[in-house]
Length: 491
Image (cartoon, rainbow, N blue to C red):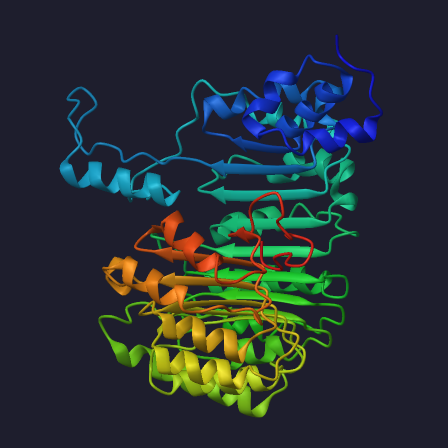
């Protein structure tokens, strides 16, 4: 017999049930029925060319199921198969080049058309009209992601998205768009009503086939769309992998009076063509910036180290001549691998020393002396509670330095380059740990990634035993303090 317990007791109990076990409790009572259904349909994925994913459409036509959806991810990606250049009466086996070409583009999420390729209609999947038929039932949707690639010209996006904007456009809080620029242009012509939007993500992936109109689409269509939302946005992500020179687009943006979080990624020597004027203008259009992610890793650095010279020079000028890095709460930055890159990082940190709560140094591996220099610079940053960095070598000195300089730190994430970065004899490290007692360190959670996987649990526990305040690894466990204190501003 199922006990008749108050709902708050049931809700508390559910927290201790593993997700894979929760599905089995669907028929236990009405509470579990609703919890399981919310888990299944809160976030929905629709891939138009994936027949298995499309089978979920029939369930979403049920108003009860549809009203559970809060997040919708839609992929409108159409393959453009390479046509044979011989007579149709003489079918041939694809060449090795064509096979490799198809496999690469499958995993990249794109399909590279040949000069003579034409759209092929999908098989064994519903029509686009049937996909659009679910939109009117999604009355509680507040997050929408759309990815488009090689959408045929014969598909008119205006009527396809009309019911979407009527039903949930004005309610959306988050919108993410990605795909080729022709898809962006045609999508934006649908004129979505986004009066409640606060978070916008734009991703421009690398295009294998050149689009000579890329720059004009960014300037004439994407920029006006972004600016129409500028006054209401609090979060803006712009990721670009195209060789397009995105600076002309960025120079047109702003102002953003309420923007608090910016995430900007892309190869500085390709997406920006070594021109930092556009992103400099963009970053200076904010008045309340609190969280900044700036990862402009140049492509081909290992082949040509000089590719970083323009980036490090621009970062240094930006940190010296602007207020972009002033009073930030969280900062994620790639400071380059050049010798002067560390000075740039320190200069950026100094500008937010008394406000910074989270710092991530991305894609550069630090030596022990560099870590010591950084920790000393952060010593007076008493608000700093989270630190993430890559390190060349794990040793006892690393913990000594961090615990002494940053006793207020509460979460630490370390990433080692490979297994060789960790002492071969972990027993020696554990013996040295036994001689330490980091009683003044306020660390609550830490994680160490080594050689492509998490560090072995025995060594993790040995470290934790010397830090009395540690309660969890990687933010997990019953006593986890996440995400209340450490919500990720860059999900």
